[in-house]
Amino acid sequence: MPLAREAVELLIQAARSWYFEGNQHGLRDREWMALRFLGRANRFSRTPSALAGFIGSTRATASQIVKTLESKSFLARKPSHEDKRSVVLHVTAQGEKCLNQHDPINHVVNAVTALGTDECIKLRDSLREILNHLDAAHQRLDASICRDCMFLAERSPSSGPGSAKGRTTAEFMCRLYRAPISLEETELLCTSFERTRDRSKIEEHLDRVRVASQG
Image (cartoon, rainbow, N blue to C red):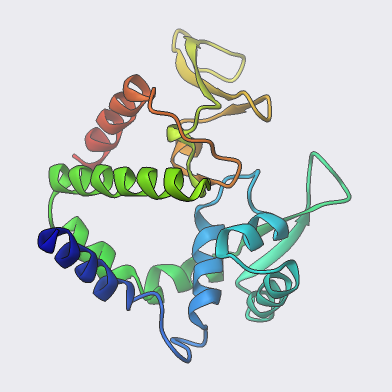
């Protein structure tokens, strides 16, 4: 128990990087959280209602945050391709630049990166297990990355019209939205996420791809 408490206290100290009073580089902590989420969210989750759910606010508060980010040219609204009555929030090039250069969590990300790939995977998996316990205890589902979701299905490699001749590409499908998912999209956050433990095959494949791309 003392060891567990010490670990939690260290997590709390790390959290000071993303929960703070006032503002940093012109944005309050919740505005940073919103911009960070929208920069990592998939195409199904970049909506005002999904944003409100992720940051734990009312729709009115989320709307005000969106307006603030729009006023700084960090966000742009575009009509949804699926539903013209809805809007999709897009992080602009200026918003991405702001995240890359000034996001308060960047130095934490750099510190974790310095641990090395194997230690990063261990840390990620440990934190995931902690969240699994918290979700079960509080009967809640938080947003998480697509590749850990029960709705993600792996499809057999196939060569489509857009593929180079003689080449095949691995494909994925979201069974909830009935939409194709690219390999890159499996790393994005989704608020329609439902956790499953039966992801070992896909996770191992994606981890190998990530490690190979870094090498």
